[in-house]
Length: 193
Image (cartoon, rainbow, N blue to C red; front, side, top):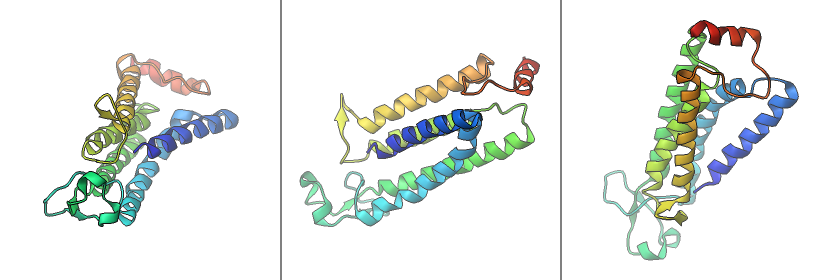
């Protein structure tokens, strides 16, 4: 249940190293990459369908998913149909993709209003909100203190994203970065105050 979280964290570390070596803004890079990332996640979730894995609790809803007996958890061996959590997450990720694309293109038209890092922070919040809910439906995830591990990681990502947006829009400060902001970026922040 937390493989994608590890991949995102690993990707962020690689992007941070790349940004430092190439002397580019990590946050600008993250803003550019995250729409493609969430689209890849939406497509990648279909692997769970083909592998009959990462499904939810038993259900009789019209969009229920048949799981072969060999793939069912022992406690659900007598149930045939389950929540297609892969589908829920794929649809959610497509909605997040649409939101991030909207922000990206809106930011191109309004560069002084959309601060660097916003798209990446909105990704953290939006993806994690959906993942938190969907994980609650799953049957195969590791638990800790009544929550699934992926839910705990999602709560941390939501908190980090909210903190970052507060930093940018309430405290009116640029996010810490591997390169110092250009004079133009500094001037934009000063002009907005």
